[in-house]
Length: 426
Length: 145
Image 1 (cartoon, chains in turn red, green):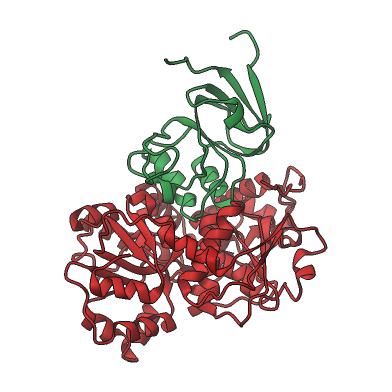
Image 2 (image 1 turned 90 degrees about the vertical axis):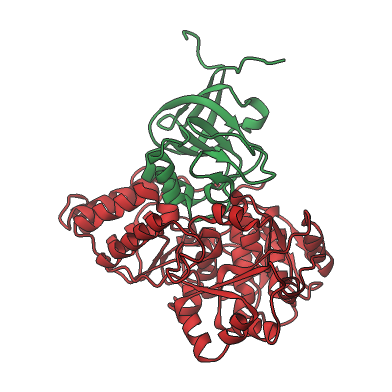
């Protein structure tokens, strides 16, 4: 695998007077701890300094925090931690309106409320969405942010030309408390150059799932955070939801943090500009046939169709509208359950606009503020419901849900709806 | 042991205290979200090359990091639950793994001078020394029939 050598940095991050004071505790214990933690991470990557950020986005839910993480948040709250830049939360693991029906654990749900309370006390905006880049905040070219999950980061770097590394929950929270992040990875020009070229002139990519399949093909070929693909030759203007699926799949299958698309993304006016004067590792094409091969490669097991999921990432209003049209006047096949997850804001708008009714009439569950794969108690839910296969139009969720022992199958959006309503999988 | 290590692998970047432990050498990348049951420490993703293996108290060698933002909290969580590896040794990693390992205080390294899959076996006893940026083979796993 081609490697990008990290330039040897100095062993110590160079600090400003303010940062030295922060480390000495002049701005309180939470800030001291947060900066100390960031120093250690920055040192690993050879960061030479901190850079200010304008916005943070953090994952923090009880499913991933565990009791230890919750204790850490409580501790920070008790010490008076306060965010100094706007910070929002990613999707969480409980939609309280659905918790009982889904058989989620009451004790864990109570802890989830404690998580939310602790975060709010630190002035974290608990917006609970993994599509903040579509619904909450769109940073401009060159703007430095500290975001996670990975889908938000790759969208920020690629489509907006903003700058973020994958910032996990504790890292994004630390950045929100200190207002800065160590300068490494995609904060630096040298890591933002394209590394290989992907020709899309033979790919139609007509469905959102096709974009995820493309991300799977390209991501699996170079599992490397710094492997930045340069897409070229696509014959129309891609939609935001399409770039979202592509980015989420690249980040999921390839752990990639950025892509360029020539003529589409702001740092790629040309292939040459995207490559930044360097020779690409390789060039290859992804065609319709390659995308078809992705769908054919999923084993169908016993053909179980009892679970179809539209989630991971949360759906935009346009995706909800499309699904409403596809489910209009139909009913789910007996024994099949369908879950849609979206943000609080999108669900509210969808209700007002009449997009929820056709979904609910069909029997579809539309959850807000959560993502399916992080639902508390998911493994138990799978066992209780006898779900064996999970069918989805999201390549990301098909990849990410494995530890819960689902057999996962990627299908196009309309095919997913057809499977859900007929109980037939092919 | 009075003799020196049987083998030395140099790493490019490293964090954490010196540890020793039994190696688990994976041919596949890793994510605590995608692959791991975070209540037992077992790799449970169907088809993962280490499916069924435990990472508890092991020195885990993974060629790549997969995904995923979860490791930031998850490494801390599994440490508290007593099912953490002793160290994470990655060929190529991503920031989330590092952020998680630093929070948990568990050693993590990235980049290697020799591919562990070629020179180490699961069960070998190794030492990870982040200060010297080396991984050393101390004892071979006993050969089994």
